[in-house]
Amino acid sequence: MSIHDELHLAIETEDLDAIRDMIAAGVDIENLNGGTSVLRHALDVEIEGMRAGYALHVDMTVLVLVAGADPARPTGEPAESALETARRGEHWLAVELFEAWLGRPARR
Image (cartoon, rainbow, N blue to C red):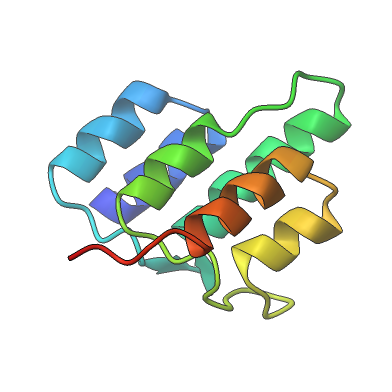
């Protein structure tokens, strides 16, 4: 199993420690799995949990975002950004996070 497969498995199982460790080890955070970005995959899992009645959260999304993922980059089927996915999935907390992230001042 490749490191990217392991990362996507960690996202499926919501294993924050494993996600954090792989990011720290330098995994390519913009890697596509079946055309879907790591960020969109994390977001999809969070939305699925929300629809199943679990508490709303953005912990995986935050880990991937601060590691350098681009919430405005279109990926997957349908081709859309993580921000668009969050809006479509009614994940208001992720929408707020992405809008704040995209509107922040550029680093110097």
